[in-house]
Length: 328
Image (cartoon, rainbow, N blue to C red; front, side, top):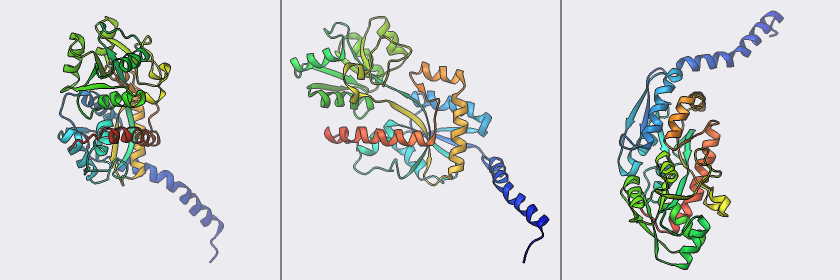
């Protein structure tokens, strides 16, 4: 049956309006209740310093966000809980390099798969590691460090914040790339490790860069030889990046970002990412991140987060296998 022209045009106009109406309906229907942000570590750490300011500011776009710290098993407990959560956008993870790269690769039976079980939303920020020595050491550059270690095999040692941390892996990657013999001394956290570097009890330290480390470098209490970022830090332009010293394979960042359970509707993931971009554009939030040693990602997107996650898994899995690291 042929429709009258007026009826046909009316129906066509209605059909054309459906996508816009769908977007409006979706915007009105999500979220309708508080969103739960799971931080898989106890309160008070760097993850809290990133996640809680985001949760506080994103309320203007998404409504209430409840922060829930679920520590245990080096972050794996809370991460696994999100992997098993209903994929409806109401439970999301504040994930990082530790829980999404190191833990799965260093576990014989991981509780989750970072690629199969999660959908990246956005990377909130990254921060490089620093390679530092005590100022009494006759070492002023990364190349001098490598030369000294080769000339004095087994005599140099480096501290890190613990076995299986990214700083530990950065130290081991340096050894693998340069063929040097440097003993690893793990500490129970970054604070005790830095304290021993300052006092000279350990000659070398691989440490996440932050405001405290930069200030100690400026005052001469420690000597940072290089940072593992692709470029120099804006806050410390005198410290070279590893690529400048001829070690581009040492480039790495510790990332922190938002991840949803696999199967979460793409429209919801996109909404979360868009709200996050608006929040990160806030200069006060950027200042909070920078003061914590974190470089905010001003161009965050699900696609960019996916690439970073895959790149970091490819970067660190061979190192973890090479040193036989097992966390379970």
